[in-house]
Amino acid sequence: MPHHHAGLVARALALLALLLMTLLAGAPALAAPPAYPPVTPLTPDQSLQFPRDLGAHPAYKTEWWYATGWVKTPDGKDLGYQVTFFRVAPPHDPANPSRFAPRQLIIGHAALSDPATGKLVHDQRSAREGFGLAYAKTGDTDVKLDDWRMLRKPDGAYHVTLAASGFTLDLTLRPRQPVMLQGERGYSRKSPDPLSASYYYSEPQLETSGTITRTGNGARPVALAVTGVTWLDHEWSSAYLDPDAAGWDWVGINLADGGALMAFHMRSKTGGKLWAHATWRDASGKITHYAQDQVSFTPQRRWRSPRTNAEYPVAIELATGDSVWQIAPLQDDQELDSRRSTGAVYWEGAVTVQRDGVLAGKGYLELTGYVRPMKL
Image (tube, rainbow, N blue to C red; front, side, top):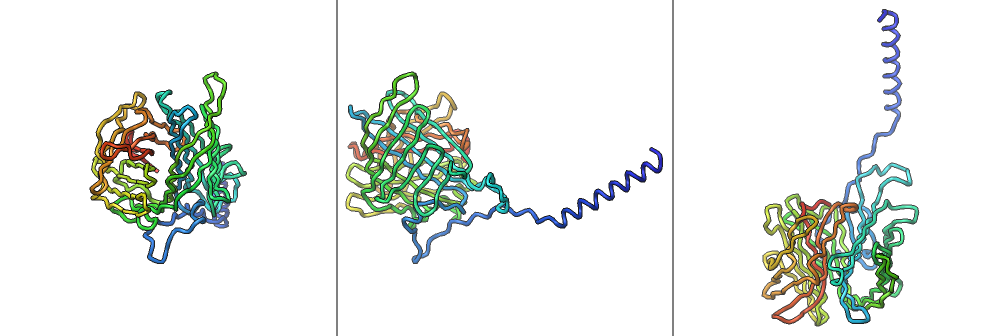
């Protein structure tokens, strides 16, 4: 290259470098991703506040509203249903002014358990919050994802409406009992690390009525009037899973005597019990909490998925203190593949519970981390 050309290139590069440094010096520094608040034990003068805590907590990393229930059709047939709304605050630049910035993601799962079908009918949705199309409002329960919605009305009843692939739901869930706080007054620990925890309450024994319509397969849709009982969970957290956790087994049971039973078992990646807890509210309203050494999930029968090859313990013996409960599925195949939304495959299904050989209640069993370790 001629000497004068080399000099021109060098001067141009130097000028470009100077211009770039000037621009960078005048530009604001990139903001750090949001820092999520930790979930910490509640002091004696602290408590969850209602109805405020029925709504969203957008500063926390993850949150979900989980409705699971058993309903009967007019001809007496049992159906199970699940509706879940997730709110996720992904890492993002809080200073980004764009209305398209991914400040919150709203994800929906819906499933119907019908033994006549033989497997779960399910659907999933996801969208960024915004433009009135997807949101999770603060102050009270109001979560929306396109035409899927869970709204708590002024009379305290929840209205759940959605049109999923294969079915539609239009259900009203009416509280008959007080909110049931889980863990220590709503602080629910998930591992030996006290920061691996959630704020968590349940609303058992929700009186359920409305319509379920089966769609698809070329058949004419028929709206079935249904009645039954639902369990509603609401949790929010910034560090739900311990690094050593592979997943969890969870059960929520509406007991036939009007009581309620919740139990969970966090499994380690080596297969052992990392943490466990249970809450039992008896028919009189008395609440008993069971520490991790008082709770055990013992598989009685496993089912292998023909799609993922995962083996799920679909029949379980649950021990809470001196009480032993036998959990059995409405149908074996209740595996839900949500890899298009949350990335997980899990078993979530309607179950019956017996105690001393007598039907004691109906609810839902959730089994996660059996295909691969869970990530939230």
